[in-house]
Length: 358
Image 1 (cartoon, helix red, strand yellow):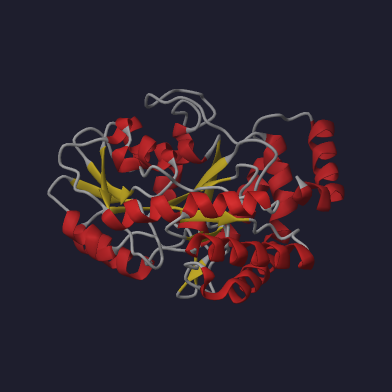
Image 2: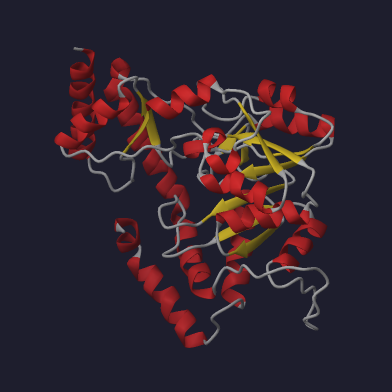
């Protein structure tokens, strides 16, 4: 939690303000963060909720996606993307990713559209955005609900627009490890559509649409609590600074590692939630790095389309996704990494790759 320690005075002030204010759910702290986050993303509305998976479910439900519908997404992502589709009764249809960006291939998405397709959920993986100009055009051509999964892409950009501003709606997670993370769970849905925002907000609180607390639809509750909202509001003004620092670390890794492994494609608009290399001997390389004191992680394997909860008779193999899932390895990328630590990572990767080549 070095990031929290860095901004501790602002966080402590936010916590004290909430404790002194006596509001644990909702209130001015939540409203202020929602307004600030919507402005940061370049949209009109943000609705806080319990976590990123809930945000996906809320957005899909508000859009009327449910049983009998097909939703096109990718299998190289966290479980929540596909779980949300199943939780509303729809069927995920997994399509191939682009090998360079590791995000949804617009041509593959276009080929998967059927009369039952109602939505697209591209995932901005590892902090790099999917090809939203192409996917927005595709969704418009076919009348599909376009929902951006921005759980790893707070502040990312493509074609001069930030993540979350391209779709009919977009979802974010504020899990503590995210680039904008709370000290517990949290999420949000953002949208430019006022009517959609109103439906989503009702679904976060039992279907209530006004102070009468009358349930107009069947709904549970999923709310961003006041404490987490206040902490996020304290961290949000520092997010651009944190993004710049991550880009600097990513640039140093990119330049130093060179051709020793398969590097992520450089993208000036990426926010580098993860710095993910690839290598055919991924597990052996990870062991070499662990020996040198470098922690790594794998995001994600096995891909979702081969996991029991999501198996479908009509699902074709996804060779690019499957290869990437077997080869990707996440390196440390936190802004708090100091210069010598960056060089240590570079040296360890180059040594490990050389050993794997023998």
